Length: 210
Image 1 (cartoon, rainbow, N blue to C red):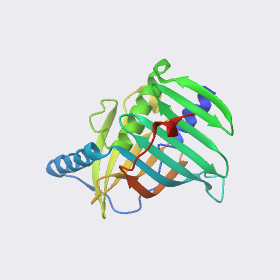
Image 2: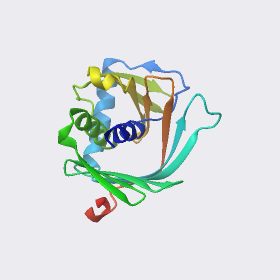
Image 3: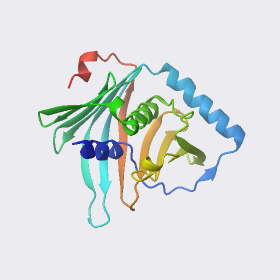
Image 4: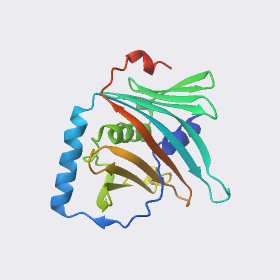
């Protein structure tokens, strides 16, 4: 079960290969980018968005597609609801990871694993925009057409066994995360496309019940 949850956490931290030309940001641009993201992040109390996830495996001719909805409520309530082609949800709540796999429920204490804690922090940070001071990663910044890109390389040796690099892509105008990419030890990747984003609508705590 623990291995399955690790894999699931890594899958929801992924995105797609950026084909646009990357240009490194200057120190001044990095400072402005971080300020813009943090200003917007402080205003986000709740966020919900539909998503489509594509898992790319080299040995398959077609990506594996799943879809659902992600819901966030500050300070750290987060749920990913997969609805097609199966029902699966993972909820981060009160220091626990709550799993509902087609009605089969389970829970894991985040405090039992340093890796769980690191990943949870980054997942919440990727939604809220508050992740740039994470000392667990080496971060580099790039410009794309209409977007900004932050690349996170894990410093922890154990985490590096699972994650080579994480890339967060931000809409330049909105200063919010629009795509996230995980580079695995292999050349496989998963991409998640976010759409129909709604910010600061009322979300009841009961939504985060497993």
